Amino acid sequence: MSFLKLKEAYEYFTFHPFSDGPILFNEANQTVVALNQSASFLWCNSFEVATHEELANLYAKQMSVSLATAKGDIDSFFDSFEKSQLQLPTEPNYESFITPISPAKKLIANKALLPDIFLQIDSQAFGIAIESIVLKREFLRIFDSFIPLAKDSKPKSIITCCASKYPGNEQFYIYIDYVCVSKNVPLKGVIPNLFGILFETSYSAQAKLNNPPLMFHSAALSATTGQTLLFPAEAGSGKSTLAAVLSTQKWRCHTDELAIIDTATQRLIPHPFPICIKGGSVPFLSGYYPTLKSTMQHHRLDEKWVRYMPIKKSPVEIEENITINAIVFPTYQQNKPCLFESIDKQNALKILLQCGSSGRPLNDDDIRSIVTLVEQLPCYSLQYSDINDAMNALNSIA
Image 1 (tube, rainbow, N blue to C red):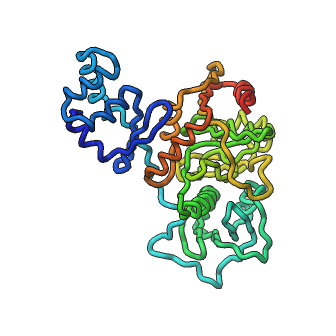
Image 2 (cartoon, rainbow, N blue to C red):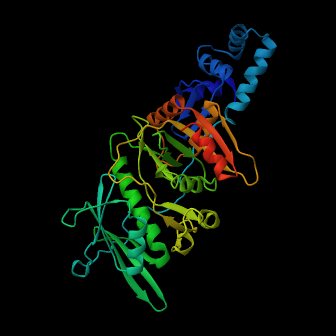
Image 3 (cartoon, one colour):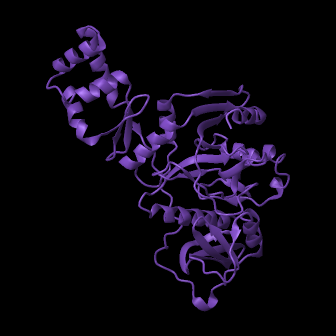
């Protein structure tokens, strides 16, 4: 990138102060650049001078270096600027769980199943009808910690799951308020669809507010001391396994997969959905959940086979948003020693941004909120292979 192109780029980036070096954000192409001290000086002053030479003289004077060194540093900054831009993640192109299928198909009223499961999830009240004894029992098992509603209450949404039998194959149609949103769903795929509908409906209600919340691939748990830790990590990091074990040790699990953060307050919006356990974790977690091996397997939209376990020590009433006390980035590394250490804020910010899953493009307010979250919290990395070592490390800060 040349000096002139850098000056042209100025109008596309917004500047966010940050303790370890300011952050530049390009909302149009969803990229972030983290600057160190010298890069920050060059960025800010490139727009105060007319030529490359003027910038070099200004830099040499400010940094007390030779003109030749200044020119070399500037050229290095220009060369690395585009390469250092962090592309924010975009969500996989899965269809929404709550979008009516086309052509629209309505459930005929006189054939409608009457809801006999009533749940309160966040501010949303659901009435649910499932035309399968097996699936109804499984649903009640994994959602048994949620607040039951009185049968005479008026739910905001009615979810109906109707069986449609084909020779040798049982499939289902799923309706929201009697409008079909999923069809030809195999029995093993029904619960993941219902799971997605409940979560997306609840999140969408939050997103319609004046400050749509952020969402990260992250577990979130509170220790018995009340300290709440955020565990952002990509799939395969072991965060769900860690959450599953901690929840048996009197930690309160608020989510094992998707953490929702209020942009205005940087507080956690609890969504204590059942813990999703993949096949590789079953042998290990069976020691903590003796019935795990015998529970029903389910086929998710991403083609993964999973089991669901109700969250232990789940709240018995709707929780207020929760203050987050620290961010821990966990990584399971087989046969590696436990390493638990503080990490610098700029690195923590980059990792957190890469774990973003807002379901929408981020804007300036979102970036400002994420910067504030990282700025105000201690940040750690946790590498572990032994779960007891990991728990000891976490107990040292909780």
